Amino acid sequence: MNQPSTINYSAASKLETNKVLRNTYALLSMTLFTSAIAAFFAVVAGIGSLASIGMMVAAMIIVFFVLPKSINSSMGLVWTFVFTSLMGASLGPLLSAYLQFPQGPAIVMQALGMTGLIFFGLSGYVLTTKKDFSFMSGFLMAGLIVVVVSMLLNLFLQIPMLSLAISGAAVLLFSGFILYDTSNILNGNETNYIRATISMYLNVFNIFVHLLSILGFLNDD
Image 1: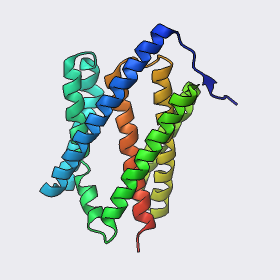
Image 2: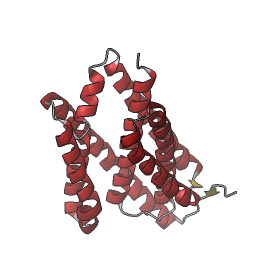
Image 3: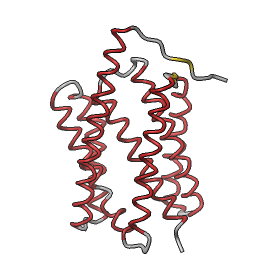
């Protein structure tokens, strides 16, 4: 069984790695803030499910077709903020639904707090131990395919316990991606902070959404 190895790098590569890390976390914090503002206005505006789906589709078009062409330019930053704003706004209907529950605000805050703890805990672990989690690549991609296919199937099956299981698996999966993506920066495999930010943002976004689902299920009377 593969075990995490320790990352080794020269002084020069360490400086470059630290620069990518700083830029990634700085941009990530700004995009999360922008995303939160977009989500707030989406809730206030009361956008519907169709608008949410449209925003999600637009965000996916940006991340798969637009950003790759501008990832090394200043326009990459612009499109990153557009992408994360759309992702945040797409949460409007979901957040509105939870906020209507008696314990809704508490559930949302718990999901936010737990997401923060997971992200900082796992990132901090990699940064402190310098362990290399690149060996997880194949497992994570396989897990992603399984989770996505399961989610699509459950759109038709509508089985609550399956939904709970999928959310639990998704939290574990994207927690693994945090380890992998942080390690990827440290070992020099990821040198573009915009691309690294997008990866981290999607990890945080998905963990939050699925924690929200789990907490909502557990607090459902």
